[in-house]
Image (cartoon, rainbow, N blue to C red; front, side):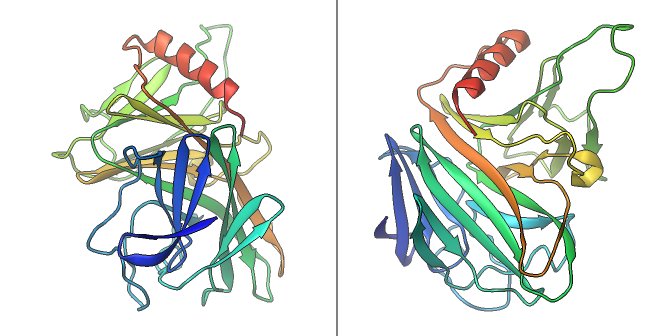
Length: 298
């Protein structure tokens, strides 16, 4: 771990895996603020107005990658992450841990180099005296101008398949006629548009991946699917949200009763393919991303 200045903060951890780098600030968080090819474009959106700030009771949208709890419940979910984090090396992991919140939970993000990308381990600890129910919610805020893609379940014709295969969750502001959506047979796409308003959709993605294509580069997020898990938001382990200034790629763990002193854990892995040209045809796109995900371990 190398400590470097970034975004108005003097103390930030820089980690390298092959040709890929990541920066995690030590002064608030835990927050991953940069992820990209060394010397290349940052895939993560940063909010300049909040960079360099510390302390205070107000929530700051620093951007980057953060750990929340689901189901969403304001103000508990949106507890400000304005305090410094500790950073320790532990069995190949660099572990970033925030102070315990007033809700008696403590958030931790651990990072490890893996196959030219990074494995990311999220933990939420119960520091109270009673058991609590929650799901870890890993939210990655992407730079504007790209397209999010996540796979549909394999097409099976009627009557070979009689039962439903996946939920699609919609919010009160979801508009399925929005032209930013492409509802393909093999893939669902949500395109960022600076002129667009708030838009969100969730799904159960059994293939365990989603992607973001930006300026000829591909960000691949791997995450688990557990058939026995009780996922929040009508059974979603994946959600994507966009508005005029950004697009979020979000994965969720299953709901868990966490005993005092215990924790809920949720894992991801991030990779970059650059340069990358995505096929326009839906089936070819799905095949390429399936093959790429199969080569990139969680």
